[in-house]
Image (cartoon, rainbow over all chains, first blue to last red; front, top):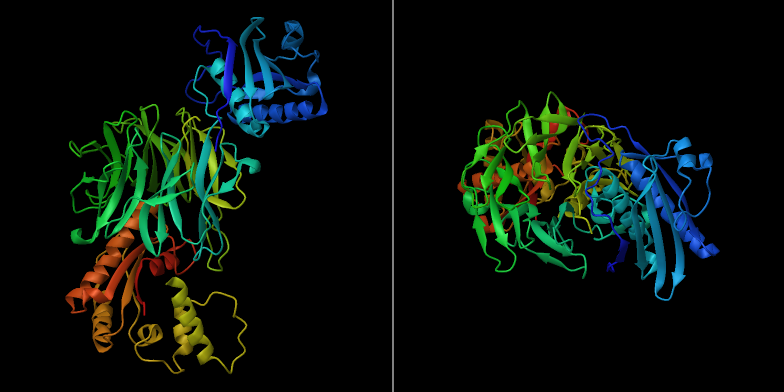
Length: 439
Length: 163
């Protein structure tokens, strides 16, 4: 479905990124960047360039780490791909970085050239050319360029060329129709697509690290079971086909297994965590306790699993080795914990906590230390990490009323510093968001 | 299955209120109001409506608990007797949770609740071949609302006649 974009770097600087943006605790002052018009020789390419510019500008602004200097202030209006900018002009309007690009038609599609300049140091810091085989890939091109700019300036891995799978919701709260849907990370309507028809309720989709598969739970024939959706073929396949409910699935980092809960009727329907090898279809049981064990999430190195259990009386967070050994409680605060998700950097665990009538989404070290709350509200759930580990997405639901009003649920994005929260737009209500790896 | 219940209740509602002007046709008809309305009408023995009106189709749970209260056990004793009386009746037990927990934890809790009801009925003599159970977690509230009144109605195990 997704064609590979050919990236030809014809000049590359391999010096370490300069980290011009200081990412410390607390609020980050966004870095001003100027983006020239993306020039095209004819009206088609000019329109293409305009759209690209918009995608790039939105991405960088939405990250909270940049703001785009108002075009009206630009003194120099030239194409700066082949021409050295008049840095003084850009300094004057306080642009710290300057991006210029042009697009042209070539035999096999479209060619985009771009240059990124460090205005204060008056030097070029990135120069590249993309060959775009299919112009319908425009949104991915915009995201790819955004990633390059983001990475070059912040020194962090980008996250723009990614997708979000989530549950689209509509209808009365007691008869909700829930469908799997997928969209670009920015929620742009042109990228939005439904994956299921809403006949069966679906819940908790999660991407495989290999980007091709999504695991989720579906009530097919009213039997709640874990499935895998193949994004390439559109095929759905049951993986938790046991006599009992399977749920709360997530892939292992190598995409070869799914860890999930199985509620075995021969075990008093008590949920335990199982690992299912997708190749051999053999399953191994990892937990064995009279409490509920659910919401497992692998560490990125595949060595450990964080999960939710009420074995101590109330739901808390625990860590175990991948084979189920060395179970240790890590949550230390007061309240009811859930939804633990290991960060892709490996250093933090995101979670939800219910205390004093409110849900909190927070992060803690993997040993449970340094817990901090990022956002608090009446109903928050399903934290999911950006692939670079800097942001979380989650859903927020309003209170509902006896007359059936309220209960709106929306998907939100937030920097783990707690700043820069914004809604990711969806055509209907949205819940259970999960982020793909960088494509 | 859910739809089936809904239809049954609506059917009962119309039976009972054929003389009255029904302004509520397209709206939600919940089990409580349906059973009240239909109590004066004719109820077919061995049906969902019969179970609702004359026995009680549901039991309620404490917060974060799947233990059957004394009241719940009394209801289930009556359900078991009713099921013995209508041996051709099959049922599905649904387990539900209120909205104050994560989706996944509540699926687990709903399954434990459904299983509590299922195994109680089994111990009371109902053949397990006649019974299934399923968890809906917090996905299918009976009462919409973000307060304890709604939550206490939503933490439930419901017995649904499936044939």
